[in-house]
Length: 56
Image (tube, rainbow, N blue to C red):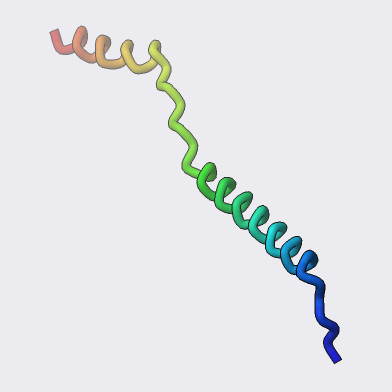
């Protein structure tokens, strides 16, 4: 036969479950795609300049 639990035990389980749910939501909200890295200034500007100079 099942034994009745005390109200404090039920509230404690509910509180722990709520904390776990909030932690999961915070982790899920912070998990997103990584930001793109900034392109190199040297490699992006020298190739078009060299192409323009070759066209002249």
